[in-house]
Image (cartoon, rainbow, N blue to C red; front, side, top):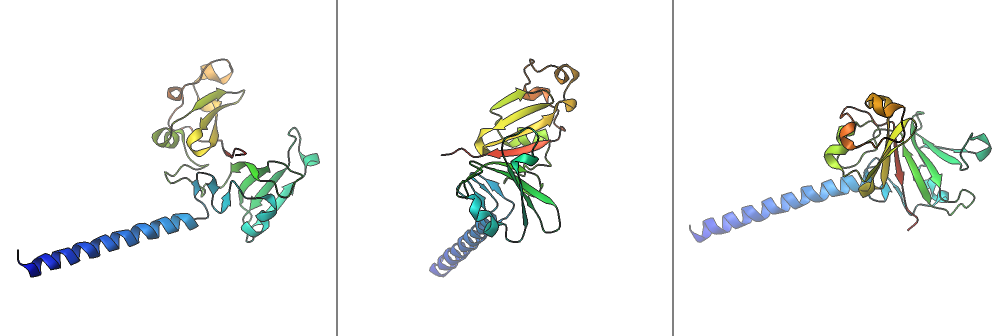
Amino acid sequence: MTIHNFIYAMIKNIVLILIMVTIASGCQQEQKNNPFLISSHKIGHLTSTTQVNQLDSIFAKDSIVKIKMENRSLRGTSDIEIFEKGGAKLLVLEARNESDPSSTIQNIQVIDPRYQTTSGLSAGSSFRDIKDHYKISKINNTLSTAVLFIDSIQAYVTIDKKKLPKKFQSDTDVKIKASDIPDTAKIKNFWIRWDAN
């Protein structure tokens, strides 16, 4: 190999590396600005440190509806519902301390299936999407649902027990294992819970 060919090959490799770095950087920037990406301590532009009094600026193009406690039937907290301008409900938020405007958000119910993790897990996913990409930390058997905890993304999802074998449908004492849940069972509710720390 001549010195000319060697220099040409080196320049070609450097250009290829620069192109790959630029593409990777662009993808990371796109994910960072994705208004529907769920990641650790973040959902779109909402983070675990976001305060209630910042919601108006974060969701400036959307509608925010605060559901007062007296309008709630059984729960003792107030919800903050986020709607797209077109009317589609996006998220339901629960503040850590509803009477404090500087309170952070504790619970987020993910409604719109456009909100998803990098592996594609969303409110419209099935059990297989969980099983293939996440470790299930725990499964609770409640009256009408199986509650699956996914600690790595601080999430829990519910699956309707009607989708499970009959032996689980009327008994809350039977232990539900991941192998008992059909791959096709759809997520009923998708929640993110952010710890205080």
